[in-house]
Length: 364
Image (cartoon, rainbow, N blue to C red):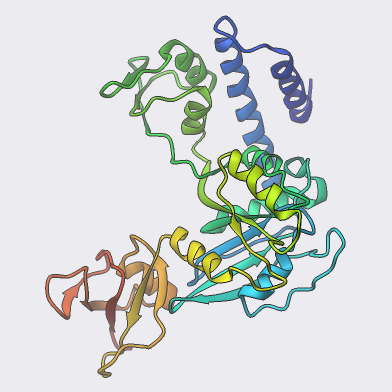
């Protein structure tokens, strides 16, 4: 009986050999569904086996991962925009572990992570690539760093994609309602058009026999499989083109622009355009500022707390102390999210940018 790895290799080879057209699209869709299931099983087995790896815990500050080919200046960039002191070298694989630093911008703090360089085959484990890419599942923004000598971004996106991470994509608009009987029904809303016969084949490959699947967008088989998988991660990504001070920079920049990529030009060595980079990071992390005010003080803290857009009072309580939710009495808010100053709110209240928050805790 073939192993998971052997079966994955066999299907990947068959997909390469199969010319995609109208006559083969159902067969290709079924193969892709089988491949996705096998890759998920392989990943679950890998996680169950333990082992060493990188783990990034989500904290108070939003996390931004610097990822890219080896030796494009990620460490220099980290040092230029944060308080970190990452080791810098001119040879490949200088960064052997994750180096964090804190970037400050517009009264907010961001945790910047310098990740080891990504090489082709990283998604299959080369250069500890799977461990490195897995870190992205717990960050708020991916910053792909390139330079005029290494600006092939496509293999990096492919390696990340093979690990189930989707950059600059929205989650598929799909709902799955499992039932005890009634068969498989694939329905669409409005003017959405999909290949229901193909999707029925794929859904059955995933073991869906009795279910209503409601689709709210035009989608191909890959988007449909992503919706069925349920373990995809969707992240914003920006592109940075370092070493703007080199003669080769212009050609690389124009090439990326011609491919629809709008990279932020910087020079870590000369500290050029770093404020624009900081601004782009802040704008793409969807964060808001909340000022904490103690019960018996007139003014809030000068330094705001950066939290994710859509966060509630409960989210803030959990960030501050593990016991704050259980001991919570009420909170008062002054700002955009309430109708009048110092309005009393509960744990489920959604905060807005610039709010001043006071949390009241039960004594004892």
